Length: 155
Image (cartoon, rainbow, N blue to C red; front, side, top):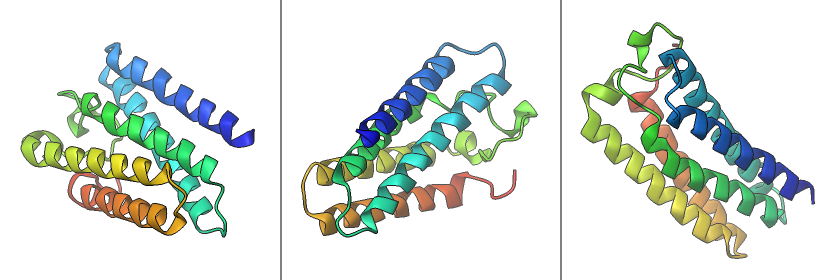
C-alpha cells in the first residue's frame, strides 16, 4: 500500500510539473524550475528502484512503480528544453549550452534514455530480479553518459 501511495505522489508530481512546463510559464526561471523538479522526481524514482534492487528479495511493486515514473519522464523530457532555458536565462541550471548548440547529439541521448527506460520498465514487469537489475544498470549508464556531456557539475 505504501508503494502505491508513493507512486501516486511521484506520478502526480511529474504531471503537475509537466503541465507547468508545457503551459509556457511566464518566465524562463519558472520553466527551468519545473524542469529541475521533474528530473529530481525521476532521480528519486531511480534511487528508490535501485535501493529495492539491492535487497533480496526486492519489493518489485516499488520497482515497477518507479519504472513507470521513469518511462513517463523519458517521454516528457522532449518538451523540457525550450530555447532560452539554458544558462543564458540567468538562472542557476546544470543544463549545458551544448543541449541547444548540438541539438542532434542531445536528441540522440534523449532517444537512448527513452529506449533504456522502456527496457527497464519491460524488465520490471517480470519477476527476474537479476534481469531487472541489469536493465536498471544499463539505464543508469545511459543517464551518466548524458550527464557527462550535457550537464554541468557545478552550475
